[in-house]
Length: 311
Ligand code: AMP
Ligand code: MG
Image (tube, rainbow, N blue to C red; front, side, top):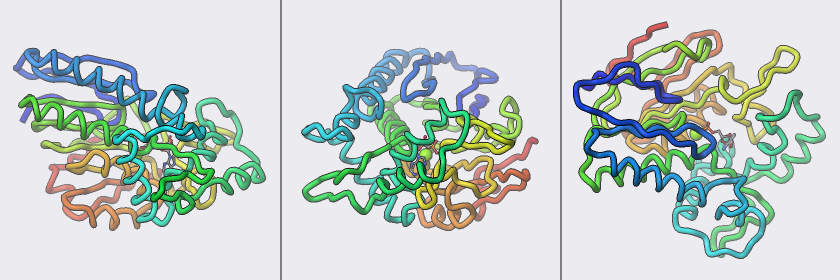
């Protein structure tokens, strides 16, 4: 196994391995992107970074040139096939979770505006935003948002990580680490660290990741505190408020980074019942770290991935 150590949620290479490796860094999707492979594969890393720039032009919610922005703002556009695939998956997944996960959560995300707010919105403001949320209003055939606005922040990085993985595989590149913030996908075998949500410079646990993706959703990177309560970026579309299940972080491991991405967000909202949903996906597992530092995981996670608690 490669002696490279990765934090799920922002890649940190703690120690190198014998082969000569190179890591390129970029800033896309509002997060730091790191892609690492053998030195000989540098040109492929560069191509993958260029792809990130292209994906940003499709999925960004804030860039007025992006496909998603245009769609959300009523411009008549031919929907790009990448965008169509992610929206279709997002709608299916919203349905599957009965709206605990909902890609039409956008008005609530805008209202909560976690990056800039210093106090929570009023109940009236929350209710007004909630009245514009609900995936079932979106019609697929013919496609129409019917006044809804879409936020793909919970799944787009997973889709992109899957596509970059396919790109490297098509070039026969081995031993690659793709880290899109909280989304890690690897070709090869690596030891991965789950960041300690109570002390984010430390590792809470490690496990082995082989030719799969690991995605973490947590409340310790994007949040503000008001009167002793933490308000964070994962919202419960059923209440309009921040999801509150006493969860500090959820990490999902799956062959598909998009599934892992969707599930980590959904489990954060659903709590422990989300673990059974996770088990209904093939070869897909999850670990929840609760605010009281207890943990729960899908059956066999510890043996299957050689889970080591370090805290
Ligand atoms: P993640 O970090 O993958 O868990 O995704 C969180 C992001 O997904 C947020 O910043 C929002 O853009 C969006 N989001 C928040 N709550 C939900 C939800 N309940 N369902 C779908 N997307 C959400
Ligand atoms: Mg997610």
